[in-house]
Image (tube, rainbow, N blue to C red):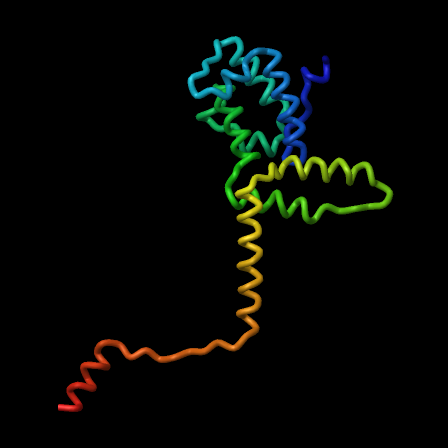
Length: 172
């Protein structure tokens, strides 16, 4: 139970695990639905407890990127910003996470660490049909671009409207 009270430091590398622990803890305290609901409200004491919990478990880099003057007084806003920052469905963030997965390092003397890193990377991906289709489309487009660069390109000159008018004048 003590482990649930202290969900670990919030870093980019361990977001998925941290989020799972925080979700369980917030459910136990009965505030998860209020934090996730647009209409949910926390009383002053619960808000202060949640702010303390969330902020106390951030590393300095995450704190600098997440906590602002506009959200520092609201546990709900802090929770929302953290979720948006680390689980963003924007293409740039999804691509970064996918690349992290592709370039995991394997060391024979650290097999357990590698397995853990693979599991965390897969959990971060949160694969959806749209994500896979978009990735395949991007791969296909990149393959086409590579093929086109190596082949010869035909070009032609276009004679605009003025060229046609000039040819009519010459014929008269």
